[in-house]
Length: 194
Image 1: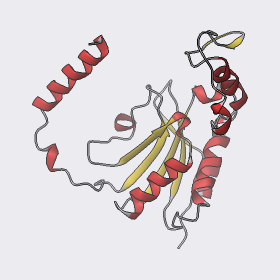
Image 2: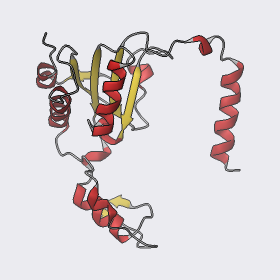
Image 3: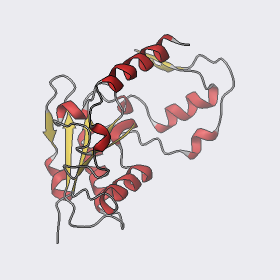
Image 4: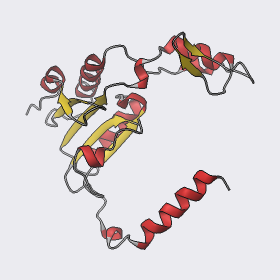
């Protein structure tokens, strides 16, 4: 058993011992909103948005992008579980700004091993077998942080399954300060209409 696995199971045991009445939480989120954000380990939506278990839906992926799957989750969050407001929250120092679709496709074609980055760019270990399957994925990389929030809010707002009465807010989380910074253009695009 790996050390990480042991640590996770040990932490889970402590959590179970203090679980209390959380098993009685209802399925719909009590605060009726959803957050789409990045999977970056430095982001803790529960802390930066003042959340407790049962409060909201948090949808995470690389970059916090409005992929088809993220929009699927938001639509389910609204249609079946009653969320009434959505937040798109990207963050400073995002890894998705450190490469392009072409970069990751080239790295994956070389090998499936973990790559590294230094002042000269990305490098592959070159060990093992690569795959050309990466060409079929839109990796949703982006060079401009605020523009990526605008693009994602616009994509959600214009999706035919997203009701116009849901407000969609656009923010950037600053990993150095913990502050949420509104992207006014994104929030304006996401404004609800009835």
